[in-house]
Length: 609
Image (cartoon, rainbow, N blue to C red; front, side):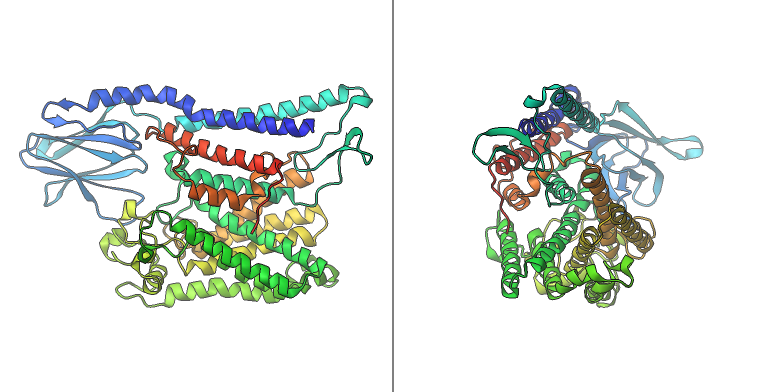
């Protein structure tokens, strides 16, 4: 028990240290922000300088020395094939100003309304103050010079401090654990207690009720690496849902591409696939009645879909505007098809152990009916995507619409995927604020759309394959090699589909569309990460999975609770709109839910659907 308390105490200390990160960073960054606000948020000459205290913004000042009016146009490079939009205009001999975002690199042009006078590209930095002078150069050529008048602010300082504290917490935790082991070994034998990892249970009393020396129980049958993977994923999901400090690379990508937040949801589906294989294997050994198993699948499917609708109803005033598709709704449908398929072929799980021919492929050959059934899902998604005619849109279009391709397909957001949702569900029942709206000015589009259900179901089947590898092979080396090989092969196929580029491939990596390359990429990372955790935790026993195994056993409670209690005290309160304030709030909320999971774990409260 002492060791268990030590593990818990170490985790709490580490969490407190991490949560202090943004507060410490705020001490360094807040004075600069206050100085900037006081210096440039005032009337200066004929121009009111914009307030540069807004997060991820810089002030751009235009001084027009020409005798004609000019307009500054621009666009971020993230917006593929988009036209430049007007940002600010300056009359002859006058000045103007505008706030611009600093998340992406910019392409600028100064125009007189007829032609471009000059073009330039620039990466702007947070709270920077940039001065653009438009003047006449030699031979009456237009000269555009940009000078940074104020030292820019590093938006990444809170992240650097956070990473330093995390690294320090890991070092302190491991040093403390080693010191505890050394202290235990130095005690006389009659005072020693056995070291018990946090993932194992221990007994402190003998059969007659008297106190006895602690002894380690038999190893737990739970796959500790999978628990760690699930716990890490749910904490990441809460963290990114709270804004992840406002950093673009930690949030969802605008359209094509892959950021940290894009990995969380598919990893959960992948983990669910591994868990389905484990549960079905257990059911086959217990010879549970088929009627009971079918009832459990249907009940869980309905509950997940219902909870998804309940979460979506928060903030909606009318059922005619209720978003029908949800994260848990996608879980429910994918779970139903995969669990039903596994249940139908459940007997093959036991026969796979007795395969003598092609024994090195016993995780594939006996399950060929399941493999064929699973392939129908991505095949159907591809057929709908590239063959379904969409009114006013080119066949096979997968772009964001809006400004994309110079507004050529303005109302074609998502191509066939968006069209199916709008046709079946209606415009009012899908997500109204997709990530592409900020850059591409696209129309409503649901990232949990109907067509994406097909590929997400295939992702769960890939998770089932990982579960088969872990439970059909006895040798650790065989398991690790197969997981890594599967991860590499899936990654190469995904790379071939997207052309190893963000926008130029046949099927880009796209979380909004749940494209096939996106599914294979996330499954590839899932396979390799699971192999790494399995090697470190279950094979080498270097790490017990603490502190991530605590939220693992109550992940559904943490997700639903964090969605319902979002923006409520004590999980959230008003903070300055800065990276340090946003990062602190995200860490605070994540830490609060982690503490709740620890309390539930020690109270032996385990909730599952």
